Image 1 (cartoon, rainbow, N blue to C red):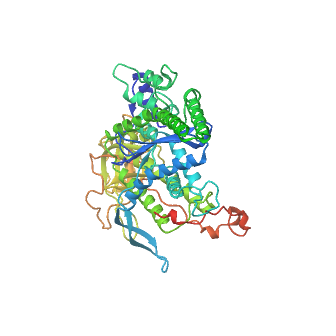
Image 2 (cartoon, helix red, strand yellow; image 1 turned 180 degrees about the vertical axis):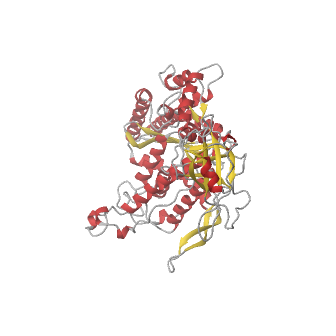
Image 3 (cartoon, rainbow, N blue to C red; image 1 turned 60 degrees about the horizontal axis):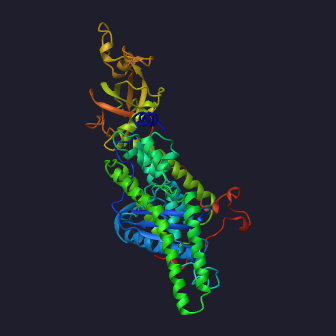
Length: 564
């Protein structure tokens, strides 16, 4: 966490209210997101108990499993979940637009631009907390390899046809959620904590009710007291008034309400199976239905407060203006969604249980690259974030006090103007360090030459050298407080984005009086070295030579149910 973040937390503790740590919204929010509030059975992370799901704030679809240990009921729950999520995905998969993408020509080996389809929008699934993201990933892993009755008539407990397809999509969303800056599967607690700082720990921020209490505390009340009530307040029956954000449940709820309700349901099923005549069967069927409704009501009582909290969080986030580079990151999410759609349509098998060495290395490199890109873009979009980077010595802002034209040596001299910047920041600079500023949306590079005396502080009795390079040497000073008042004056040499002519293009060179912000970090991230193809991976990383039994497990063959 940056120094700005620590300061905001201290102010939140002192003032009893959450403090902003961003001036713009750094994540994309869909105009029609699908909200998913899952609930799991205690002690069995892969056994769903229920969920609220839907795109309508006032009309969520209630899904529940009356007996989580029953495989058939569990598959029925997953099929109902697929009936809610897959149509939402299909709505976005069918609307495309033309886009250009750079690919390698297999014949010439050159990079060429080709026109391809890009989905005009991507479906966004919002969950309450990181636990919801982990649950989505777990569901995808447990569903995408399920065998259906058509695939294998002899398979025990065959899954409904659309369950494996939903598993593939949830797996993709779970993997994409690990990419920094992605908004396909955001957790509401992470979204709010990114833009506001509370007076509690980051672990406590994962309780959505407590986090919102800091943000919504009425005037004259303390956010800490409101958060404590959200975490601990209980009704007359001993149940939490603000249940956890899921998917875990409260032990008091499990022991006092849920366990007796499931026992009544099991007893009603046994009695219905033992009924001998129609009248008795009708009575016991009514008891079974009543037991199901009781479990459904319990699921709603635990998930509806969280459902409403997620929508309140979306309202708060919508009050912030969108960052300038958020749309660029969302476009990468759209490419990711379109790519997976194309893989499904082309008949590729499901994602393997384990990645090969090349795929795993590519994923790790992509996440590292996206993290660096996200950090840079958030700082460029948000002055408050940039302030944290300036305090850390990773950027500086100041006024241009002098701009002197200079040229490089060689047969064809190029413009290399020297710019003096007076700043109150203390960047971690060494001679030759590259710094960057945003010019027309692109980074312009400069090189730190050294510290200088300010022009007005040069002794008037010394004549000013005419040659710019000599002038720069005359201004150089090894002291970091080049100005007499302790304010550094930094000399920078501009090295690019000035056009190809002998004279720089208009506006490409800072002028005296300009207020600029320079960063020590790059604005764009470059790709790493090309990795070998999976079949050419060394044997030390799972490739040939070697026995096929030592290779990663292969996925099941694609079936008709895997096609959209």
